[in-house]
Length: 353
Image (cartoon, rainbow, N blue to C red; front, side, top):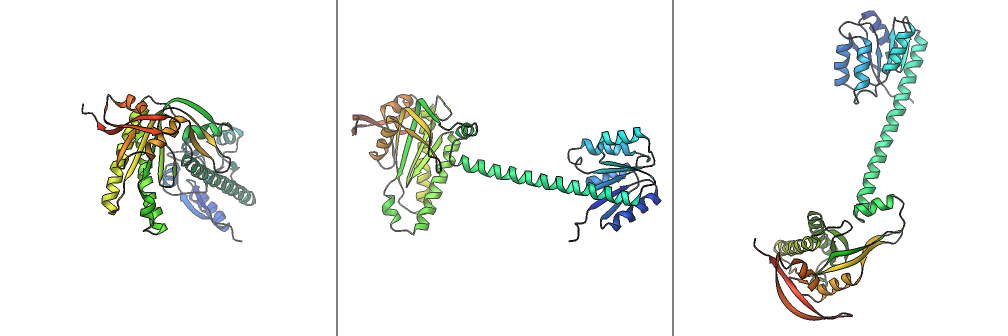
């Protein structure tokens, strides 16, 4: 297999030396560019990609030491290997070039066989470094993809805990606000559409809700069929969790109204909200999920299932947190399984300042 052609820059103020080096390098099958001094060399390097630089030291305007210093202090150029070929053969010159970052040093007049070996060695090392860098970039890309996939399943603070090796993640939150939303009569609506259309519509609606959740800083927990669950106040605690969920709920009704206008479908939602203590954690090993448990969650679900289409029904716990900033209408007492009769309120909107 023919080796891949490399681009080599030859830098020497002596025309005879440049031509000799160019011939030698071209015989190895590489493309050669010539520079008469250090200034011209740096201009070319910044304009074109090179795999190797053959550099003289004693040159006008800018010597080889200065070229090396410029190259090796520039993060975008320091990866280019440099072989110094100079008539200066004292040990101090060699040491200085190596310390400045040169890959190798050959005295003039150079040995053609040795030059070929040194060039091949430098180019092979650069090829391996480039390959390593490519693999590192690929790994970084894959890591970012994995991070995004995890973020679509779990909250970021939970992901950080998993990275730290925590196998059991469970936390109690004394204050949180839970919202359940359900599309009214979606089963009936889906019976008149193809599965593809149903999934597409749900995806559009829930994607809009996801954007709202991010906008309001609340955490989407899951979707169950045509139901949507979101919580405020965890996994990052916040004092205004009830307000954030109230704003989310009102925006969800606005979003459904827009979908109704755009699609012509009779779309409507019931939304139920409750506030109180919850337990949150990760369950499962293969298809894990971040979920919530407790009476607060169960009652929020009942607020939705026993709610009114197009309305946001809340419990006294949520009402007490919001009554100073939002308008409510008493709906009355409804029976809640396991809790008896519970007074409920309908969130109508924000109070004017």
